[in-house]
Length: 212
Image (cartoon, rainbow, N blue to C red):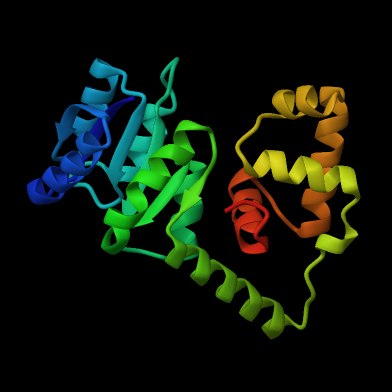
């Protein structure tokens, strides 16, 4: 796997490079700001982009979004100091598959790389804990209950596969269904769970322990 690192702190990049190279991965380029990261992604076409959310000149989220416009976009891991749900949703909406807190990068980086390489999302355990706590607090505050029990077995299967990052077409193939049928299941489950986009589907699945 060919990796591009983007962080404005040289010492952080050196630490990440060391971890990745010890695991047998190839770091093909490093960027110190967002504009340079975009240029290097276009030049080197890496398999994986690891980018800090708070980059100079262009944010890591915008770098991720631009990288997804390539004909063969890289998997994206976002590094962040923020565990707020708003940042996570923005990162996922930009195409990130993993979201790591920078203070836990040493422990989480390689598991995240393996997850993204296999097409699965990954979150720092601390992020997952915050998401679950916030979700339960919101339900209690509003006097609501979780609606997962309202899903049919098929809708639960579709939810799981969508949360893993599968497209409607891929879900249709795996479940031997028509694409239009998958789209109907997707619309139904999103309505039942009050979800509005793929990022929210992933976050919901993390909170429920459907994906880890």
